[in-house]
Amino acid sequence: MKKGQMSYFFLIALIVLISSSFILYVNNNQKAEIQPSKLSETDYKQFANYVEECVKLSAKEAVLDTAFQGGYYNETSNSIIHSFFIIPLYSKGNSKLTPSIQKLEEQISLNADENIIRCVDDFKILKEKGFETNFEKPTSKARILPSHVLFDVTFPINVKTGSSTKSYSSFSAAIPSRYSTVYLTADKISGLLANNPAKLCVSCLVDYAYLNELNISVVNFGKDSILITIVDDKVKIDNKNVVFNFAHSIGGLDA
Image (cartoon, rainbow, N blue to C red):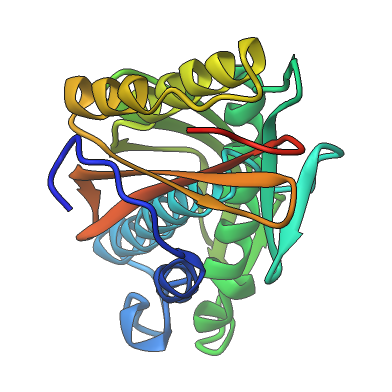
């Protein structure tokens, strides 16, 4: 599909295919090789790099996963659950339900926190080598900026072996992404539908897609809803498109 070109087709199979590749976390082969005995400064640096890589990977997955669910990580009251995915309603009849960008930042942060916990895996790679590792639960703060999503992560960690101890507390990651552009486009579309819920302005969607270099697709989603999918294939994350889904609920819709 060319940029700016509208298409109407059933997306569920495609969505499931795309989403199946979303969950990618650090495995044993990707974990830093930390030597037993006493940690040298080089080993400490290697450990820090390992955590930083976990933070970065977790941040990327948080951006992709929340985008796929319209900016949400946790279920929202105004949503449609389909195939274990949350598809939020951005408009229902004349009501515009688009979440604030601050709400999306909060949801991305929660997702990143859970991803980081899974990624470090209780630092088993260190414990197996006899190192003592104490840490607190990470707390992420995501900010959606025009060209990227910035993560500031508070993650207190103490690593000890013998009499040697090293402490860490702060990590960060900047993920290039047009999340902001995609969100603002979704907000405009939901505004159009709330103002005129019985009619879909196809030419408006074509304009939004062309001006922002996005792909926008619309399909029926149940008997009284439509699913709108915005795809950004211009700025990818690990060669993956950012796919943003949201829904509009209406008894009938005329194009």
